[in-house]
Image 1: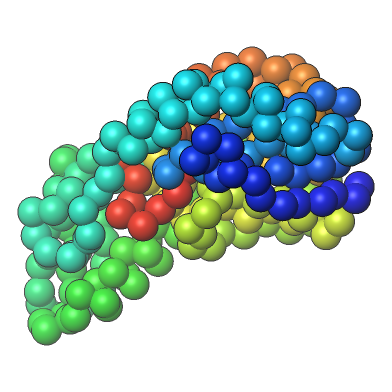
Image 2: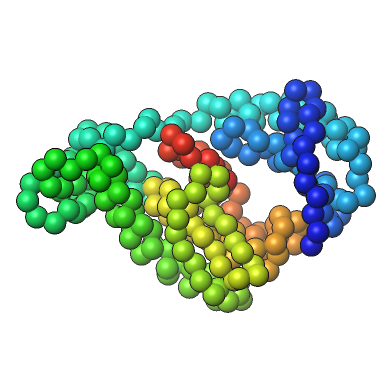
Length: 241
């Protein structure tokens, strides 16, 4: 499907306009900074897009203000006492220096990190990211298998990586999806929503009526899950979806 992308400014608001072969105009405001995006049919002019945005300016600015107020974690320094999240649950970090293999284990409300004496903050951060990756893969695998079967698609490959601008991506041509490592910090129902979202992109590439109908069919509460995901504390440099 051919698309055309450019930007216009309406009432001081920068709007990304994407023209594609769709029937109706769709306007969205996306966290964390209130990015405004309009998907418009090929035949719709910029003037028509401007009018649609002007009509929604009040709503757009309310959404941007809400995203502005969304809680964010401070920069993680990987020291004892700071908070870290695992599938929506908050843990207090306890860094323990000593001999032996570097490990991360949760116990009660604590996240115990055993590292060699003098391990740098960067090394502690890499250790935690590796641990998060393992936990996310454990939780995601059964969900990927379950929803491939339910939706009726075949996934050639899937993986996990750190992303600043998306919770996940899908390459329908390659049959591959990627999950953002940050999902290891969010409630499991958010992870499941994201997996279903990306798998449905194997059927429908765009967020059109068919895509929304498939989301409603397979995961009727997907909007509530999306709201929950975007309400979670963000990493200091992360985006929402």
